[in-house]
Length: 434
Ligand SMILES: Cc1cc2nc3c(=O)[nH]c(=O)nc-3n(C[C@H](O)[C@H](O)[C@H](O)COP(=O)(O)OP(=O)(O)OC[C@H]3O[C@@H](n4cnc5c(N)ncnc54)[C@H](O)[C@@H]3O)c2cc1C
Image (cartoon, rainbow, N blue to C red):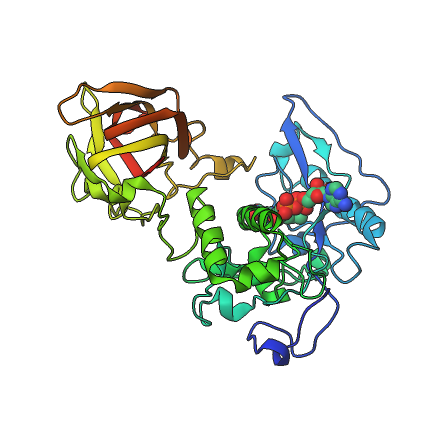
């Protein structure tokens, strides 16, 4: 295991320190507050810090509904062992900042506001990292080490480092964020321990230098790492292997990556090459196509498009009768499952932040691009009539799977009846399994 920050010399990272230390990012305590519509006086406890205007030079306090990530402290201590001390210090800073908002005279509009919740356990940003067969570094985040053969997830958050002492360093900015040019790959080699054979990591404890950790440590990346580690662990358990053996077996590694793609994990540059997916052998036609999209895009193996591009999606302008997309095979095939990847507007921000400023750009509820109602139809031969396989109503999800008793189908049709509001229906991928 490792704790702290590596030196420049160790991995040649430009963002690393000259001399290694044991410091980490600090922890935070958040709060929420509310407008009660009547005066809500606030008297701080004696132990609250006394905050002065100059301490907030780089730390904006508006809006105050949801607290501040920059109420951060304790990375100079041990964020595990010294957690209690860190908690008390964070409470004193949080109540001191609230005292400033309420009583400094700078914000008369805060008179009717009061805290309605404050965290009692510090939110820990960083503690230990476990060393694996591969160590992710700044070079990987910046895409300078080539694409790893064992990529299983992506990251994309900036290299977002904070001073370990947090609020005590109020004379400086609370963070330094350097955005990578593109999302970067995270290899399976980061997700298991180098010397404890059956120990896997999923989240902030993966094998990464401190610098790389400052990018990989966020929610969506940790979730994707969990998906990867879980899938790898399932394959290992089924085959009676340790994760290192899975990584070394090219065919199994490929199977692991393809399973991840089937479950809609994003792995950079990898496309669906699942030999069991019968859709890949079908001819695809459609009622119409929104230019420049083409029906066959749904079997090209990729399930993401850059904003405004139609290279990996099929789209069609909705009509009162709906629009359809059809897979046809030269001979009937046995089908038991259809899987569809719809568009959920990934180009738009979707976050659960309580901050009204962030929420303004978020569409709450189903995303308009996503297909809401559709029917899956099949026919045994080209001249037979269509029969219903499944009906999907009220959908808002990206990945939709429907299983049914086996049919011998010569064609399958996805008949889209409604989106969640967008005039153009969109489909990234259709898969078919026997
Ligand atoms: C103040 C703060 C602000 C942040 N801001 C952002 C942000 O804006 N965007 C973002 O994407 N990320 C942000 N993060 C990071 C984000 O919170 C983490 O990346 C995320 O919570 C990690 O999720 P996880 O499920 O991997 O781990 P955790 O959320 O840490 O979950 C691990 C769980 O395991 C439990 N556990 C531990 N040991 C055991 C055991 N032995 N047995 C059973 N259960 C156990 C723990 O209690 C915990 O519930 C922030 C973090 C902090 C602290």
